Image (cartoon, rainbow, N blue to C red; front, top):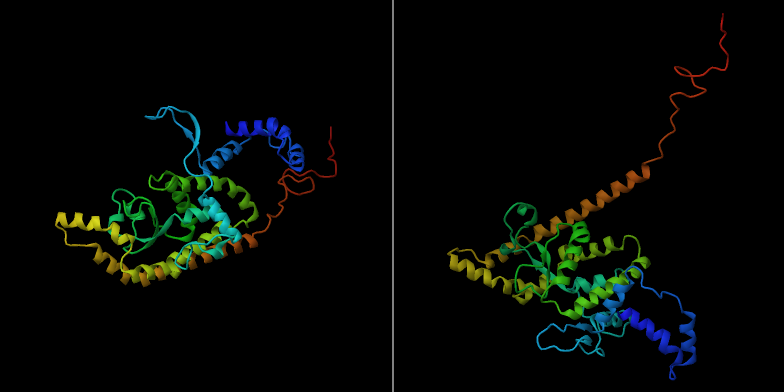
Amino acid sequence: GIHTKVNDLIRLHFPSCPTMPEDVKETFKSLRGFGAKAIGDQQGYWIDAAKDIGVEDVNPEEPGEINWGITFRRDPLQPSPADDLDRENVGAGSSSSSKTSLVRSEDQGLCTDHVTLLLRQVKPCRFKKSDRRGGPGARGRDRVIGFPGLSCKHCITKNNFGRYFPVSAKNLTDNTANSLQAHVATCSRCPDSIKASLAYLLHRSVLQKAELSGSWKKTFFKRVWDRLHVERAWSTVNDGDGKDDDSVSSSSDNESESKGGSGGTDSDDEELGEDMTDLIKEAAHWLSEQEESADSVTRSRARGRGLPGKRPLPFSPRGRGRGSLTSKRRRVHF
């Protein structure tokens, strides 16, 4: 009902407000009737925008709660993640991105704000033994030890959920981005403020996509793929520290394997992953070249394909042969 209440405020209070400037009143009068009724996704926009500033419904059925209505779950004067992103875009805020980040400051204007905030909720990781899945289809999901991927930074040290290992830049664009959005929206460890800002920025992305080029998504995620597989600046930082989140999360795997009596450890997997770094990098180059060659062949075929030629009708009035009509009349003898 927040959309209805705001319309009532504009319609009933603003015309008689003693402290509102006259030019503002004239502006509201000129906009009267424009978008008065919520159509399509406008109702959802009002809800998500209210959640972004910290408004939430009060559930009277909760134990110890006797009130009902709406309240603030946080200080509305403090900026939300969406507000921090807006400040970075105008240069008023400090960017937390670096050369090891998948999303950097030079990417501004190449993607939507929703995609930028979404990719800030993940960090690079490596495929390890505990990521292997059994059952049907496991061969298509499993990767070699040390294969680069993306993992949710909020639950990276808790379990193996939220870890994705796309095989190509196209797979990253078409499938992994949607899977990341679905995971972050339902992640129990992700803060509610980030979830609310992502839902709000999803509405803004509709307008931002109209200003971007038609192939912005493919171009941007190709950059992310190159930073993850070709540039690999994040890998050198983790190796220099000597300890990353994957090693922390794999400690439980080491304990379980030691209890089961197996002699293999994740340290062996990490050494094997370091040895296969060059092989993975070459494979990433090969996949990128294959995608570029496939796109070029498709474009060349599309350019060389002409319009189909006009074929004569099988029974043309001026044609010859069976079924054709002659200009001369046949003589009929009685």
